[in-house]
Image 1 (cartoon, helix red, strand yellow):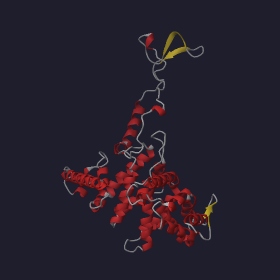
Image 2 (image 1 turned 90 degrees about the vertical axis):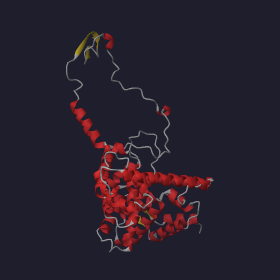
Image 3 (image 1 turned 135 degrees about the horizontal axis):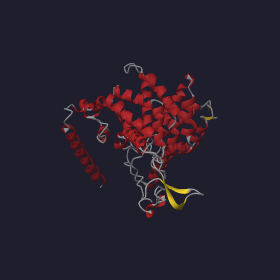
Image 4 (image 1 turned 120 degrees about the horizontal axis):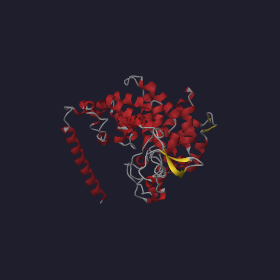
Length: 402
């Protein structure tokens, strides 16, 4: 049997979702093993991965399996479904060994995988899915790390890797307002509603190994990937300032009113003016009208490929992220960062935290820097050393490309 027919048969043997629950097939476990084996031995064109994504196995089968199959007899099925979901949500760059393909055919494959994952991200932003992940991780975290079994370690690794993979998927490009809710906002809100952020903070505070530190740092950075640090820092203050200004504003119809003589208003009424006029020419009827808006097809072109663009999320999401940052700095920062100094990913996270001029307070970071809170010489030296190392790596990569 060819690989195409084998995958198609395995996808059909999983079961189906009837709208209320997932009805598994008798060969569901064997079908999941076949799909995992196909991904393990996939070719460079990623035909097996593309076929599974095109068949929408994530939203039609894997997510319903994890949500609705809670019996102890289905433990192996849930284990294989979770492993398959982690594999399918893997970033496209990781599928190609961390390098963008130069071949035209492989580049098209890369773009197809990325497009399918972007379309699936909305389905992955499911509160019930994150509730399932929280229910799987919570009992494991209650066990002492020395007493955990291999299955417990697998659950921790799989759940946090899945959360990282979901957050790493880029949102689809939309020709809409910047303040509209996108798929990334839905994922963040699902994390908040399921209390997943509390588990992230707990693991960051009790991290025992470099692998867990890496996962926590990646998740935190990806949660803040579309946010502006300055906007997050002043989110609560902006709302309070607007409320104070609103309370101090005078009513539109308060105070004195004036009647224009020999000027007809609506119907048989006289024309009313709410402010004194020095001359008749000062009377304006379009002063409070909406201003002319430029059509979207004539607006300046935005660089959608630039990851540095910020997305203006809803107020509730920004407040949640701000509180999460404060809790992370209070409870996890000084514990994680000394251990993560030697990790490569630490540099990106460290430089990102320097963008928080108001949230990041020196007294919170004194343990990490191990210096006087009024001095920042070590921090400057590290940034200078990091930039020198990055410059050397860029020059080396450029020479290799030549």
